[in-house]
Length: 118
Image 1 (cartoon, rainbow, N blue to C red):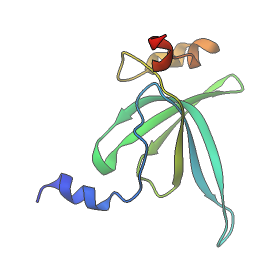
Image 2: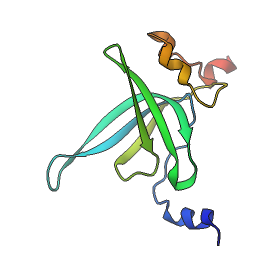
Image 3: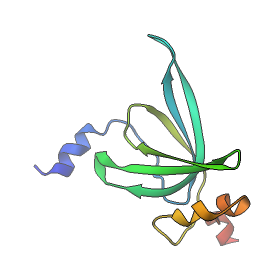
Image 4: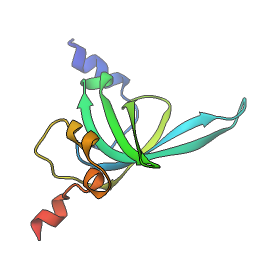
């Protein structure tokens, strides 16, 4: 048995196929008591993916009050309740670190695959 077949047995949650450039909303569980939790959304553009299998991480960037905020999520973390894809993006780079220097619409406007077809 190789490692990939062993890891496939541990992956229980079905996660959507997210790519760099997509705009996503990640809903994380925040505990508020011994048996209560709430869902906290974090919506932004996926600027990087790194790792593979169970160790896949992705970085989401959003601009909040004029300040850029980035957060790294492990894809198969039990803290993540679900991931909603808001818009698909078409990019030519594997890492979108250049968005850190952009301001306003230039930081969030990524050409979508549907717009390119028209």
